[in-house]
Image (cartoon, rainbow, N blue to C red; front, side, top):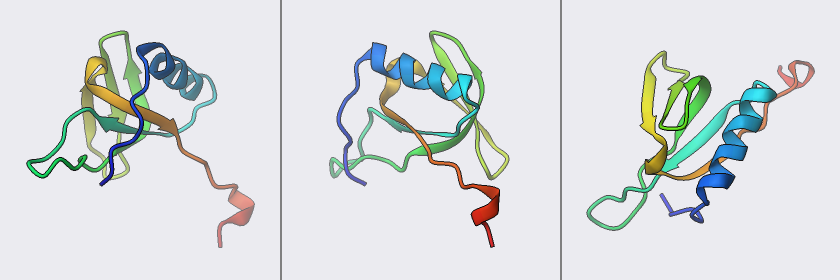
Length: 87
């Protein structure tokens, strides 16, 4: 996986708070890389709980991931599909 642009703490907070406000799913890339310098797979899901130090994401597989906010490299809001578009 490629390394996404590093976001400031303020941008990360704004994105997470926006996702909470609008009940949107997010995708989080940690600021860790493997031995070859590649990013790990993003952690995606709904925000279960959030404070200034920790973020808990409820993933589609039923697991809840705890992420320290200072370990986040990049966070983005995922597009949701309209029910009318689902076949």
